[in-house]
Length: 461
Image (cartoon, rainbow, N blue to C red; front, top):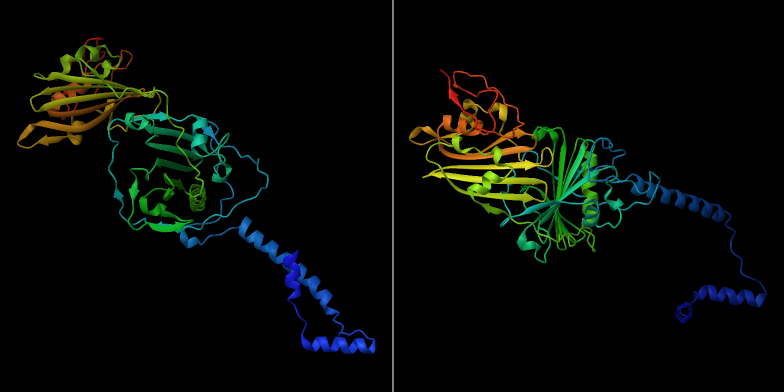
């Protein structure tokens, strides 16, 4: 109140006005001012204009926010195709507002560089030491995203089916955090991958020197996109990378609708760059660390239930001796059994991978029924100076039913390699395929196969 009085005491009327007031007081009159009937109507019109302009501005910037289309950002999509009912995901994000109107927030208008015709730097990397992968539970996915009971609605992921995985190593788990977390989302023809890595940008991926780098709220954001006519695919791909606080973030979104991918990417940058941090991996510390792997003797290898997919002793070329074996269990999702045989500088290394679900193992080079001498010849490399010997650094064969066998062969002939692969019994229930003989493939496999004795590869007479 004292500040108000002090302010009013400093106000003085003009000297002319003061003179007229005193003169009118001597005549006993009040000073008159000309009537201004238009002021009332003008004030009312101004109120209407102000209300209209304010409402128009709110409608313009809230309901129809339109970033610069040349920056790769467009209107928020009206509807995203819902995920099919038969799709199975760890978690499906629900709309907390049930379609009702609600408040919204400002979304950054980021610049995305068009790198469709640019050549990326492909980063080859691997974890230091052994790393294990653990699938995330629904609650762990929610917590990683910064939620408590549900996925934060401000990510605008309603309708997306989510799955997550976390990478751990024995070194980092001893009182530390996970190496990296990946959360994938799918909703109709739109999909995304969110990668989080404590203390650094997530490893791997593609790097474009022409990508746009900009500042958003004090955080450096790298952004790029590719058009569908450039990479041969039907979709737009948008990617943003940033290091917000102690959390490295990479978000890659893919959709045939450019407005959808640009909108989701900008919304995620806003969420990730918050001062209090939107993502966390601090809670991801499993109580028990699985063994990195167990060294096995030959007897242990033959007693393992995956031994059926390893070549039996009679299928090995002459002169090869057993060097070592290894068994691993990857959090109940994958079982692995490896064995190595050597003959001087020649070697045979075979790894059997059995996955709990379809598609959880690496992509195969050949299906079992496609293994022929000509197919092996196309995937192998001949020794210099010896036309009879071949090498296959990595040859993955899909045996079906979640089993993939990877062969690394050196110093074998085509006949020996074919006999090694087709001479593997597999499970007793595995059906035997009869391979037709051709001029290039003068071998056949007896059908039915005697079990449990190994297959015998016989030359045609």
